[in-house]
Image (cartoon, rainbow, N blue to C red):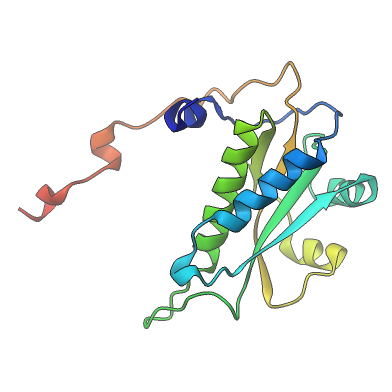
Length: 173
């Protein structure tokens, strides 16, 4: 399948089967995180892979948005390692988001469903998984095999017209 087909097919899964993801597929998802581009290739991403019964049970206590997933990844960045621009802006959240995008697209290519989750308390996550202070949680990805009843959100295919989202150099005229 080509990239556009993959991007169109992928959706946020909010109901997973209890079937575990094969270790070799999880390793490919992890590898995609290692291959993702980051600003100046500083690679500030720090990805906590959450898998196994005990770790997933802990996650279920931290967010209702686990949807029965069998694995997860907490995307963080090391605040000491990210690129910093002269105006003070830094690449941490952007780099972690690029990494997350690679992971969910690799998962989709492998037939593994995912959902990007923002509904959690970063401090409780930090405490529960003993995350160092300099690692800043950005988002949570949950993974698993989509339940047969899982369907895309009705807004999944909604998209504003191109002229509302994309502007070209004609704005300067």
